[in-house]
Length: 314
Ligand SMILES: NC(=O)c1ccc[n+]([C@@H]2O[C@H](COP(=O)([O-])OP(=O)(O)OC[C@H]3O[C@@H](n4cnc5c(N)ncnc54)[C@H](OP(=O)(O)O)[C@@H]3O)[C@@H](O)[C@H]2O)c1
Image (tube, rainbow, N blue to C red; front, top):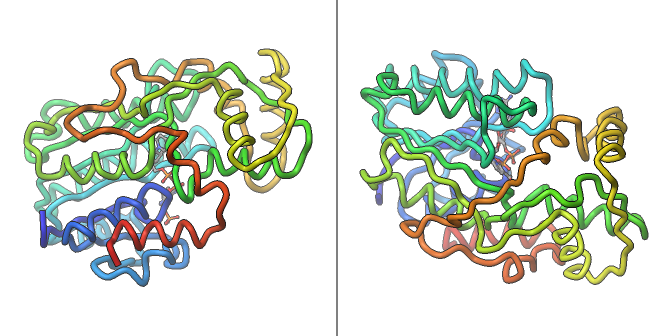
């Protein structure tokens, strides 16, 4: 593992920042391409991590980026967008990455999917994640590339958007209407997800495998929001919406300009429980519990930055 060259596409995002820090701490040289260096600003000061502005949708640029890399990790993903956007990010991009790995002589590829990825799903997110998975694990396509796929439930930790979004909403209103309040999740900590990726890189037993990643316990969305309210010390009324109202709430939120709180696509994805009965794969260690890992919700962004530095042991 030390001195390996690893390229993380999407490395400037929430999971990517934690994974890049962990890999740097293990002595790897990490390259993080981004559309805008500023997006990965927390990584710019960490030794062992190089942030480069690149168009990862350009085959020649990808091939140049991958030359000399021992492994490529794909974390690129979107939660909102058109059907075309989902296909571009979750299906066409992995295809392009695998071609560029082949052209650049890279032999190892780790791909981030999502729990519930399913080509039969009505949600474009889950459908396109399912297509992407099928493509990267297709026998024959991977003859010179060892592939591992990860499917996490919702990921929490410093810098997340999901629980932080609820903390922000709870701070704004005394009554919070909650669509799909009964939807079930099994949140997994970002450091555990990053460790699974980092451990798998050199582990031949993970080649050709796909792993579900969940934390120790499952919660309904209402339980999660209640836990967030308790953690940040707010007494709030949570108003669960029924199925019909949940749809119309998602429809309304979709029309809101700027950052999307929810869309119909999220609503469709939430109709299926996002849990894994087998929990976290034992080969990647023990996952931390949600209750033990929510301190970051009480702090500001400095806490996030400190966590990357701590992970990178700087
Ligand atoms: N967070 C969760 O709860 C969760 C749960 C299950 C699965 N996942 C999956 O895990 C992966 C990482 O999630 P995350 O929460 O870290 O996401 P994130 O913070 O939104 O980061 C996503 C990254 O993808 C890149 N990206 C997005 N759209 C792109 C595009 N059109 N062209 C080029 N780059 C693009 C961004 O790169 P720039 O630096 O250029 O902006 C960003 O660094 C995703 O595949 C996601 O679907 C996440």
